[in-house]
Length: 418
Ligand code: GDP
Ligand code: IMO
Ligand code: MG
Image: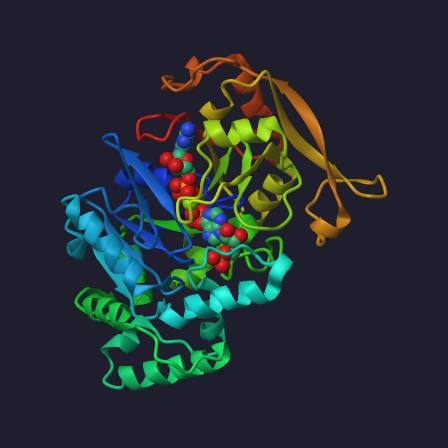
């Protein structure tokens, strides 16, 4: 029986998962999303065109692959249908290559409103969510109130939908009708897609020796249990989420590809020990085009945090590492990496503390000489400058895991496999 491989982000999201899933898909029969929802924005760049996927797995542009949205995902029908239509415009037969779980929860129009209301109530302490209704949709799931894709096919769907909408409106303190015609239209369209018991389908594929790649969304430091709570998303972004989000037992997990940027970014609020507030941070943002793929917000930028990276490598038992956006560091004279934190009391620690914000931690840096060379045309590890190889070697030694792939640009072919 085949094992299922997982690709996931080891930082605060936007590591480049979309590109890597697209690059790896030719080796797989199936690509599966297991958590998150339209808060994700996974960019794929080919034939001089870029495309951002939110709910559809990033294997959709490779003709041979089947794609499946697992039970752990939350789906906004409007966003899903808009995305499907845009992909169809590019000549892809989405209907033939996409399965949707019956058990995936639906994001209702009122979930978005509840998301906004919750952020407003938090004021200065807001999470800085993507505003897509993610938290409230997962809240309803855990509170056993949610509606699932399979419910769309039931005769009493409208009754159940109206009842949940009424509950939400009471929470929001609104009595006037809301315009949900677009949502209901999109939900109706979704019914014509292939809606399946994903746990049965995925386990059957594994028995048939089909190769499956599970695509994580967000990043490990946004995990609801192990991220910088409460500044996290509302799902388990770690490898363990692939089991619960697809219905696959832990014994069936194979390789875990952990993706990280050669530096760090974060969108939204919360601790970020290596964040740069100076010109260097601005330079990283400018060269790396660090603006959110979903919300367009400028991303906070900083040096690579190896303390945090080693933690997420551990939490995922990553079997190989993938380093993205190495080219963004091409112009820097000096490159820093954080190898420890100093607490307010001057104590040096090498783990991510429970109260990272309150601890007022300061990064302890190791400096590297920049390579000052354009690496975007390099296609083999041997061609890379010596200084970059030293940077790579240090990260491997610190984390204990080999960097098997180095990305030197957004394009499919700007990729070095070792
Ligand atoms: P995801 O959410 O993890 O899929 O990442 P995003 O798509 O939100 O953000 C990654 C951004 O970096 C996208 O705009 C990609 O096109 C771009 N990108 C990916 N890999 C590289 C790389 O190696 N170099 C550069 N310069 N850009 C990259
Ligand atoms: P991809 O898959 C980066 C962040 C938000 C906010 C927090 C909670 O593209 O890497 P939510 O809307 O999930 O309730 O917001 O999580 N966030 C992301 N940051 N990349 C993402 O997805 C993200 N999805 C959510 O900015 O801080
Ligand atoms: Mg993204």
